[in-house]
Image 1 (cartoon, rainbow, N blue to C red):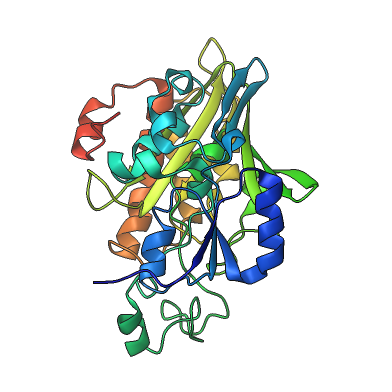
Image 2: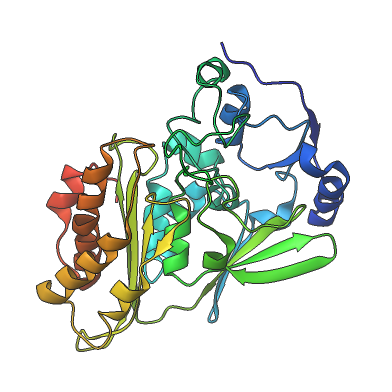
Length: 341
């Protein structure tokens, strides 16, 4: 049995108090929201904080607000709340689809939006118990010096496995970060970098307090995910797509974001631009899908063969864009275990 290491648990009631604890503890402290990823990681000794700062007693982080300007979602809103809220079923469809496909219902009941945004990167050489990792002299991400996925690399190649971040980036989301009295707001896409160890540009002591979504009148969005088990699993490749269409079906704005093929979600900007001013025909969809797939450079550090994952990127971008067009995707949904949607 893998047991949790010893730690102190702090339970502040305000974000200011949480920020003060983080500032005082420094690198020895980590935030605890739902704990669905952090606690298993601690059992495997991938992360060993001396202090956990629980956010569960901070009521402001659990609130959702919708108004004509958009939506404001507290970082501790659960994935179940997002998946079951009908207000996400229109322009924000990609977000509820992503939330609904995370793990199992029991995990979604605990897992939070902020936690999924900050989800640790994953790798076949890293997501193992302590003894297994010790047998290979560990890896660059924890306790070692070499990235076993790419031994000649100077950076860690662990892969981003968040479901909600690609969807949120496609929806133009911004995040509010708090550190004591200091607050800053940034595009979510600017919070990530392509480094498996330092994958987030979050400053020490900063708390993701809120996600802000713009109003998306006239937009459609979709999230498609490849995984080993259709009932639950981390993505091994995903696509989020969003587009604003004219009454005639011409694309006026578009965004495409790839997930789980790099250490950060990858916006496929050129592929999205190729759609603007054109209808979503099979020709334009095929062109955009091919462009997006050229960005995907998965490595052999997660499930499925890496060359196959790259090839199916084209298919999944195609599925997402056909979904935006309004095609009946029932048969494809069922074949991929996407029947929950």
